[in-house]
Image (tube, rainbow, N blue to C red; front, side):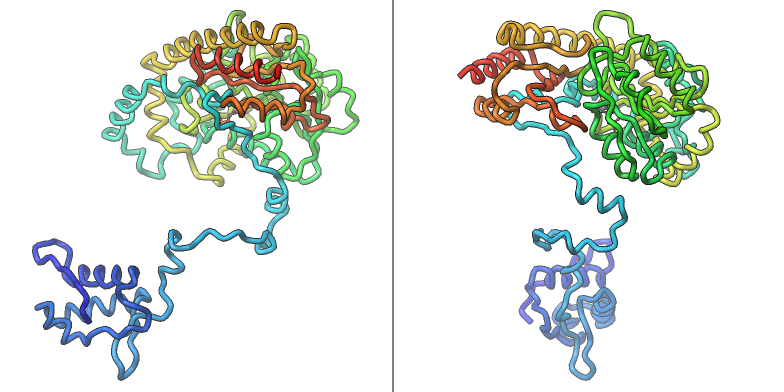
Length: 486
Ligand SMILES: Cc1ncc(COP(=O)(O)O)c(C=O)c1O
């Protein structure tokens, strides 16, 4: 066997392990072929000037791992079938596979299989008006790194199972105070339960409340992450239209069926940008109390209002424990952080804690420690102030550009808030044609059609502006207007 095997006698790794590693690599790299005979241990030991026991130890290890096999009276051979063929995912070519291979699926699994892609569109253009991400480049990463490093050294509970399933209490205290100040949410820290982003909050509540065929009322158009989550539990969805004052509560009141809950984004309706008026908030709360329906309030970007004072959250107006409030740090800090929270009525605390435990035991602690300092040292409010100013500017530039280049062919929907806006474009073109023409000049736009449950309206487009600078926004809208005029 003319195989090069290099062993380092000065290394701390035992020789038999080194030899096993060398032989394993030779097998995986096909320098040793399946069924090839290995030299007798005595011969290999002599040629490597090591003890025979060392060779037999490494052979034994590779036999136990399934790389080698001993054939009685014949010697040691490379196995015909190698474990890595199954273990090493890199070696497996992705093959188009038939969905018929997926057997034993639950109803949830089958529904997911039949569903379209879950993520919303994210056009890959030089100037992409994709929405959702904040301006992550402006996040104070050096500071964040310092805060993380601080707790890597100091927090033993980070490493154990001993953390509170509902999250780090000082962080929940900071969040409760912040929500009370800025969103008029009324809660004690124990009601705040940390989760991995709002998506997990929606999932936990859906799982705790929905049985197949239960009814959920949803804004139409609405958030896909919520829609698919509720559908995944087998719920029937009742679309409720949205106008300039948010969810049409009168339409909800006229529905004959009883709902497990109604899902709303009252601060900044997704995707239209409408704010649920105070009158409708009160009507919704009254209806919920009267019908015994839960309200799931998703306040995903309520921090970003430019101009007028925010209307208090539904949770803050509620006096009958009908609201479960969901918040996230995805839009303020960054979505990859995966930190969000639920604020649940007191009676729900033990149940939601149990559900969270069963789901994933707890959220990661290191980031929660860092986030607590980010709050208590004032960085959080400073960062919000800075980003609010920036997004306000970007929004005004977008609005000005839309008005300048589209004139009376554009209606801007929604309030002066958030990190995206929705428009109605007066164009004879189908939405797909608008998207294609935009793409031809390297501009990415998103149609709102996919967000409708009932009858999609055409000509409505969503423009995210958080990650584009002034020039890009202006240029993108100019190019879009020009290419649509052709
Ligand atoms: C309506 C709505 N809710 C919640 C979220 C945030 O989800 P998460 O906290 O899981 O990142 C988004 C993000 O785009 C959203 O649009």
